[in-house]
Length: 611
Image 1 (cartoon, helix red, strand yellow):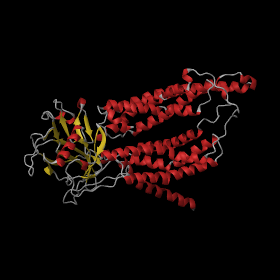
Image 2 (cartoon, helix red, strand yellow):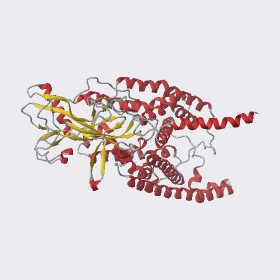
Image 3 (cartoon, helix red, strand yellow):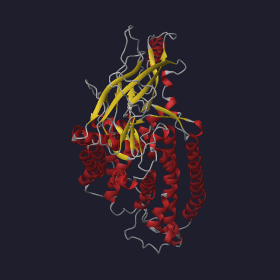
Image 4 (tube, one colour):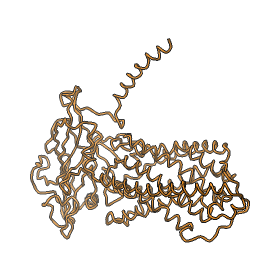
């Protein structure tokens, strides 16, 4: 009877599971349906975000610039990742309803009197923003409002931001967006984009059995128009809005906008980000990077296999067949079998670094895996950073366990010091640097400055969750017996013979980081470029694959160099094996600064911030 009940329960469970799956959207975001006015019509809420520039590391909130502001300003709640990334989202003064077109509607007029110091300061700050090519970032229905234009080879590029304006230098050179219009030609003049033509594309559900419509694209075209009548502006052809570099008269800027709607049922809601992501090229270069990395991995794998299957197998077989006297006459790695597991110098510090490395490794692996599944896509703002921070906090137990277990294996007895250093040393260094940089951003008034409440929340996560979990992991690590070594360690250390140049510690460590860095430097270019250019990074599949290749490469390079050093009868391998792959980070640091220096003319001024 029981088996019959279980058999009948299975189809019911499957139906329930299928029903649950049909209501789930990756990455966890459900579509929003809009209705026309008169049919339960909905307002399309347009949000504005911080403004940033590729020529400056300081983003600013929308309200810092003297733009039109929403009379009933509201700020939606932001997650931890958005706050850490410096996003500051608020409602905009650009109001419109779904499928109701707007024609050249004025928003406000900003007047700058030449004798008013406050007005002069606001205008100068606006000019500085145009000179540094600061970009607006607008959002509607959780999608960026993009500016699409043609680039080389008639390819279409959709930028998730658009500039405040542009500048024609005193020598007549058009900078940045000023190249798009031949009328932007007056020397030492700023041209502000005070009008936007917004186009909303939607997918109607009338023929698909669901009510309303869903937004699938939002684009705009910025324009510079000098309005002769502030109350009844005309947004047709006219002279651009000029702001002289050295103004000797009052300046009045009228901001206007137009909105149009277009139905396009060929674009599905689930693929509405595609037109932005497809316009970002480099997929072929990504595959080239993967193939380049795989060649390096195959080369290293062949070397390791040759050593393991041929050299080591034969050496161990011969070593086990001879007696101890003959073994003493052997040379190479077999001579240091009694010293190879001798505890390293500064074993406390090494165990702490390995524990923290374990925590960061597991955090990175899980974060990239979830990103590959789509849970941390660009549509889910701030999810990537939030996930990484939460995982790091919750993974204090593995860090404490690994650190305590290794420290006990090294014969250490100061377990309290080990636990405290594991929980506080590396996070403390990072937090101190983070706090110092945050002080500078506070002074500059940048939106990238983390609010005091968020700093307190981070400290609470650290000391309230991460540190106790590290203590728990360390408790179980010290309760476990020390890792048993396969051979007995000699009481008297063996003298290390004179080493060649390539088997000395520093040259070996420097060479060890080259191959792992060679596997990832192309992928690093795209990651760093997306950070500096404030673009979306979405190719997490490539990144996860490169991450796995990096792990394999680091492991194999460390095994090879460790074998060569042991063959040279140098048994100090603990720190060397840690630093061999760790030196890849030094190459990353140099590569980062080199690219930043070449990225633009402001490189020397940006280095201190990006460190």
